[in-house]
Image (cartoon, rainbow, N blue to C red):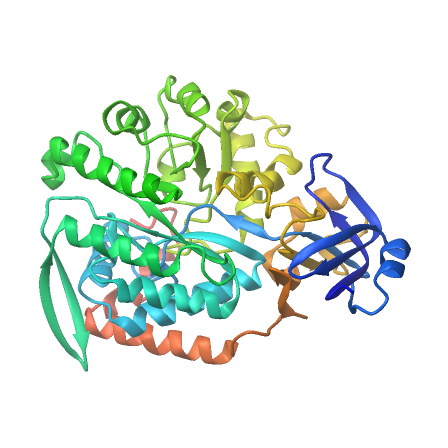
Length: 479
């Protein structure tokens, strides 16, 4: 007997044939897809299942976000438009100006936003800004994993060391009082080992750990004081830790020449590597990505994609794998992967002045089956196929912007948004239905987030950065 039967729906399968099935049903047994096919035949096979009516809806695999940042959901637009001020604020918040409640409330908010946008799997770096990773103590990673486990989505928490030089200053808060301590590279690596042991593969495979390490650029020696010799040793150590535990390895902020450097100096590329942003790549770095099996994570809505261009069509033509990331959700973007897919298509079409670049089907692949393969889960998620884990979305198609009900792949890629997601299933468990989150009290999550953000703003004296500057009105440039 099936646990759940989704009936009379359209299915974008993302299977090897990229089939789109009309008037179909999906049966879920024990967290996995047991059948997908003609509605009457599948329904007759599982007569006693709990039914979800899929009429006027579309079923597809859950979306996968290849790159985002824990912490950002409570920062969002703080200092928006003032890039230097925003980076400085994030540096301060993540290292010395955030307490345990900040990280718990942020993780809950981010997971609920992802869930309501149909993102069932996502990578989240444990921090951000200029590579500030909150790995001075395992408690912060614990809180993130506990929150995402409770909400019910699938997560890959990326933990790792900061950029040097070490030691680094971190602050802990207890009952409003702070205590600052120096943290070494070795301490951060120990924290990573602890989190791997506690969380990787837990919650029936929904909670996972991966390794993140800073991107080194030669100018970092002069700008940050992070010596190239130290960077080589530390990056190799982080990569070795990931390989020891067979974890995904990721980096944030690749640009011209950095992929080549990390390949030649630290052996960081490979089929288990997901390198984010990757703008303005050298000509030789495009075939290098393909030859090493390295995945490039394109974040089309990110500020780095304004300052440079990730050569996605060129990478795809060279045989490299490219997936999409939100870089969410600060200072000016969301966890809505439909939005980022649309942005990617138009971003590269404008560059080439060619409306045929990045077809809608390829864009959907980049946030479903291609991303699943990048995570090493291509046999488990990313498509609607018998035997795979039931990470599924039902999208409400009975809306003016999605009608008439034809050409469903185009309708989804061009017109759907996170707010159209009606029902979400992860590992066969219905975690949202009729846009109501079933696992947590959404109102409480929002109230906790507001309170934690207010405390963070006050503690870090950032009130000026949440005021609306007069310069946003009546002119062509903010600054």
